[in-house]
Structure formats: C-alpha cells, structure tokens
Length: 237
Image 1: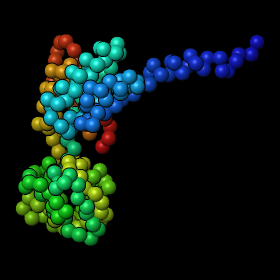
Image 2 (image 1 turned 120 degrees about the horizontal axis):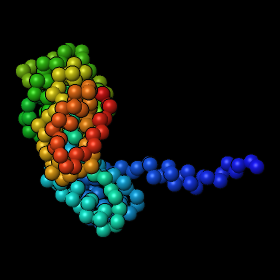
Image 3 (image 1 turned 60 degrees about the vertical axis):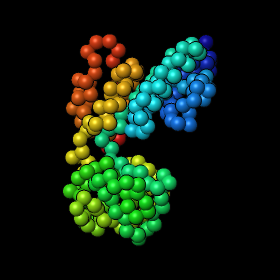
C-alpha cells in the first residue's frame, strides 16, 4: 500500500517548531512588563540583551523580569547576553543623528571630545590615527557611509565623505588596518560578563570572534561550578 506523503505533515511541523527558536532583542521600547508578556505569549523562546548598549543594571533588571514573566506563564524562556566585543564605534552625535553629504570634510577623533556633529565625531579607538593612511577608506554606520582618509593630525583623522548618509550615535565603524590590532576582550565585555554570570543567563553571544583563543579566554572566566552559560560565537568578521 502506497504511503500518503502528507500523512505526517502535522507531526513534522510540530517536530520542526520544537527545534526552531524565536530570538527577540529587548530594548527600551520593549522592556515594559506588559510588552514583554505579550512577546512571550506570542512565542518568543530566547530574549537577547545587547550589552553593547544601555547599562548593565538595566540588562540585569530585564533578565530578572523575563524570568518572572516566564514563570507566571509556565514557559521556559532563555536569556542571551550579547557581548559588545571589539567592534569600533563612533561616539555620540547631536540630536542622535546627523547627515553627512558627499564631498564634505569630516573629522574622526581618537579621543572623546564631547558630542559630535555634521563635521566631526569621536570614536572608541584611541590610536585611530596610527592605523589611518591617506587614501584608505573608512566605513561608518556598518558600511552605509564611506569616507576616504585625507591625512592624520595628532589623534584626529581628516576625511572626505565619498558616500553620505545618516550617522547616528554609537554606530559601527570599520577601519581595515586597525581591525587586527583591537583588543578582543574590552573593559565593557568584562562588565557584561560579570553581569551575565550574576544574572545566571543561559547564553553568551561572543561578538566579532576571530580565533579559537577568543572563545577559550571567555570560557576560562566562567565559574568552575554551578550554572555556566553556553557560549555562542558569532562569526562575523
């Protein structure tokens, strides 16, 4: 007797759904008890806390809130802390966003000189000028904006905007010569790890992993006993 190819469709779908997880990033707009409850009721399996932004106490509070709500709903919901990693970022800009126009001059600073504007912005790379050469391209806002280096003066790098766009506060920045020289485990990573261990989270996302040693270093910092979060290396460089 021929087997009905659709006989086990429902069983297969149930099997698939048990293994396919929904991961939701929680931020200021979604961290209220009512909104979080609706997200969990809708089927979120893992809540992601992005430690590159906000403060650690806020993330700790959100982790505790997720646990409480999951308990009330009778659900098992994982908590993942996404470590900041060695990503180079621009600093704050006035009004949280500025427009850069093609052809204009724009200065990147290796020191935090306050709030940036449409003419300059600070970065998280103190020795920025050391890794910039005339003609190099620099990518801001995760590649949306392209600059070309003109020269470096002191700890500032003067550039020309090749491709403009909207630059918001604390966006990703890519300077090819500098990538291999950035410390893989930052001071903010240390704070995030301390918070994650104290909050007994389920997963640690390791950002911008470049080699096995980056994972081993974090693993060595985890408690030898008790609850140890699973490590999730992110291969993105």
